[in-house]
Image (cartoon, rainbow, N blue to C red):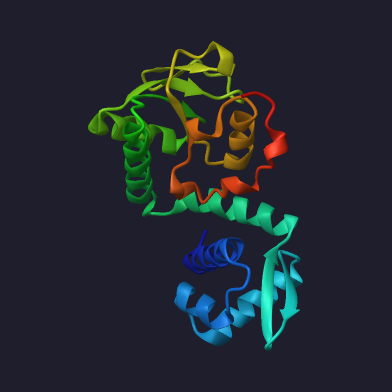
Length: 212
């Protein structure tokens, strides 16, 4: 991927992420958030609308509301995955995110953690855990045939995993699917998500829950 395409993808990701978090964001605020000129922000918004990634609704006082469409959510997930795999700053950002999520776990008295998803993020989490006083009991990934990852066991069935206090999502290809899978089997508070994944967990319908 060339530098221009990488920068373009990064701006699109930031734009979709900002709209997902706040639908009534102004174009000026988006431009400031993205660090681009107002005209360029407008150009990106028009491109997203043409591609069917966002829906634009006119509001009172000459304002506009922006909403991600299903296609927009899919594109955001694709761009996030590509960013996580290619960004030179990924290691630092992922390491910091893992540190924060492990701190969150320790505040709850949880020090036995199950990683969910084989990936570069899982590898970073394994190394970060040792520094934070966290024990990684192993990894859960129903989509792999591997039985070990680095020096840890890999389980394909969550019910067969060794005892753990909480799960940390480390799937960078389909984190939303991983979250939904865990949400259907565990209490929500036991599912921890590093913010590097840019996953909005509130999109999961409470009625999706099948077990306590």
